[in-house]
Length: 262
Image (cartoon, rainbow, N blue to C red; front, side, top):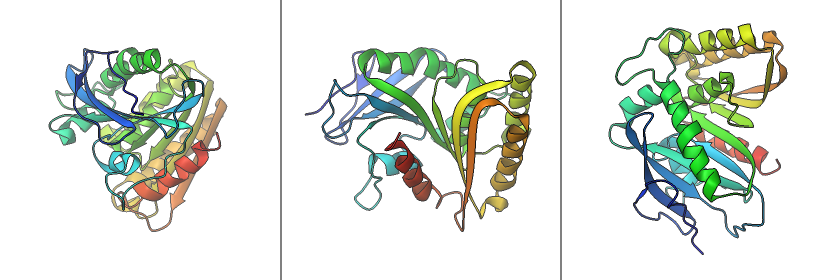
C-alpha cells in the first residue's frame, strides 16, 4: 500500500518514484524558495510501530540517489525501522547548496546565494519538521545525514539551542567553508554552554587532504573533544582510500548499520 504525506503543507504533488516513496514540493517562507521533499516509508509500515525519522540533504543527487535507490546497482539497504525524509533543491542546486548549507552566523559573510544556513535551519525547525511530525505521528527518534556542505550543515545544527536531532551523521563535512565559520559558531556556543547532548558520527575519506576536508575535519574534532562537552559522544572514522565522492556508499552503509540497531 502506498502511504502519502501531503495535505500537511501547501504541497504541489509531483509523482511517486517507488511504491513506498512520495515526492512533493514545499515552499519555505524562511528561504523564499521551493524544495523537493521525498518521504520513503519502509515495507510493512504500520502506524502502531515507532520509527526513526531520518532527515537528509541532497535528496535529488548524490547520497539521495543512493539512499532512495536510483538504480538496482546504486541502491542502499535502508533499515526497516527508518523513515527517510530527503530534501532536494529545485533549479540550480549548486548555488542553492552554498546558500542553504554554509553558515555565516558570526562573520555575517553572507550574499544572495551564500551563507544563509540559519534561514534553512529555520525552514527545518518551523516548517518541514512540524509538518512531517503532524502527519506521521510515530517517531521514535530523529537523525540527520549530510554530505559535503550537507555534512557541514549537519555539524552546524549541533550548536543551535533547539536540538532538532538525536543523532548526527556528517559525511566529508566541509568544515573549512567560509573561512572555517563552523569553528566560530562552535566557539560562540561554548562560551555560553558546557552541555551538548548529542551523538555524532563523522566519516571522512583518507584522500581528502586534496580538498581541505580531511585536515579541517580533524581540527574540528580536536577542538570539540578538548571542550569536554557533557553529554556529547563524537566518533570520527577515516575511510582508507576514499575520496570526496567514493566515500558516499561506504559511509551510508555504515550509518544504516548503526541505525538498524538503534
